[in-house]
Length: 378
Image 1 (cartoon, rainbow, N blue to C red):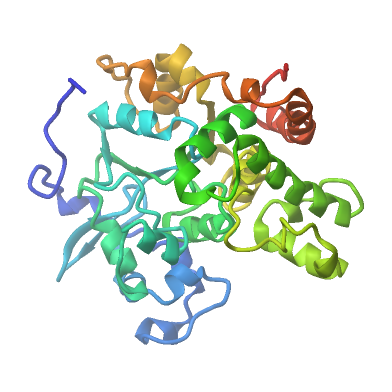
Image 2 (cartoon, rainbow, N blue to C red):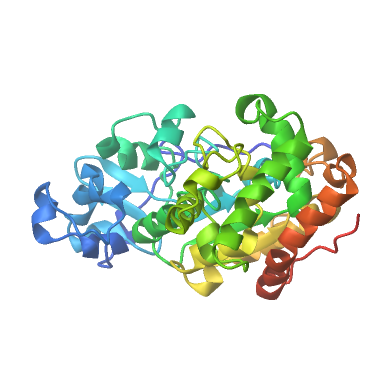
């Protein structure tokens, strides 16, 4: 990128302590019983991520004038100033999040995390595997907030595109709301689901889908898993089928464990083909996150807009964060945006039609919720 600006960080920003007026602590603090502030115990309604975190308990025990809820910053006499993110780019994988991250970095009022994908609200195992925040659980929040510049007058954010759709999405949404508050701005990028699945397969081919001969086989296996769940519940789609723990529970309740196709065997942990479909259930993921955040907290954008009308997408984002318009974006070349309209032409027509039939009700619901949709044509 040719655009450059001075870094925002502890050495670049001086934040007056006058911003810290008596407000309130993060919402999750209200779920900690008094004895938990001493180091043990905790309400089971509180996110497991926060329940065992000593730094979170330290924040909750601070005097009321130490935390400024409007800026998301906390002042600790012994530690100094720490600032939580004010927005999250939560998804979706292979829908243009890297390109959007680069655009966000150009805005002079935005300060991004030093890691693009901290995966803090995700599973600890995945974060460790990705070498993100690789520390003991009671240190993770301190490590996480240390990724963000200490500026109370900027918008701070991070982008972990798996937050929206992986099996830990419900827990991620709950933890984010309890730490950051239900008015925190959220952004989700979506993409025509079959095209997104093709891009996902190509990118993760050697790491996650070695057992599948090609994209067609992987997609068929994925559709088998979701269609089977629906059949086990009477034939109609049910939200329980969205995430794999729900599909496993449905299979166990149906007593079909021994009669499943060998390639499902059943929902074996090593088989990851389901990701190709699960990530594209956008309306379900939107509902998961909206159940913990204010209705207006979420902005959903079609990633194709980044290629065709990038400034329009960025203006919507600026308005969502109540940022002034930035006039000097350096627009990114097409190679950094996921390729358009290729996946469905690599598949046999019957499989394309099967996939379109599966995604159609989900796409219709997304259009009803956001106005975003796609006309499926073979």
